[in-house]
Image (cartoon, rainbow, N blue to C red; front, side, top):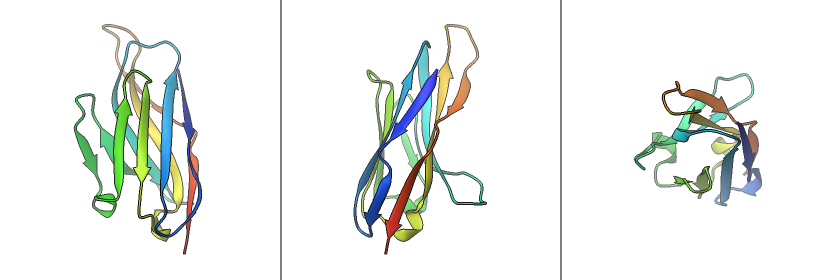
Length: 120
């Protein structure tokens, strides 16, 4: 199973970007899908989460600006980022819960990361 991220880039303050993370390969189901971000020399921090039932969670600093969504038919999670600020600059990673087969234990997989840079 592989995760392919796309959508990062350079944008001005107040701009928007949409990140995508698509899972490919053989698996039974996908559970919780998350977006994390990481600054150089820092740990990865959770930004947003969407569970298989569609319920979502956001950290306070992105509430009202970011929207996480998923397309189960495409095995893809999205992060729509609006009203971007310089402090949103980071490498963004998806982190996905994969169930390989019925009865098997699930495992978690990281995407390769995509750079988001917001200029002031």
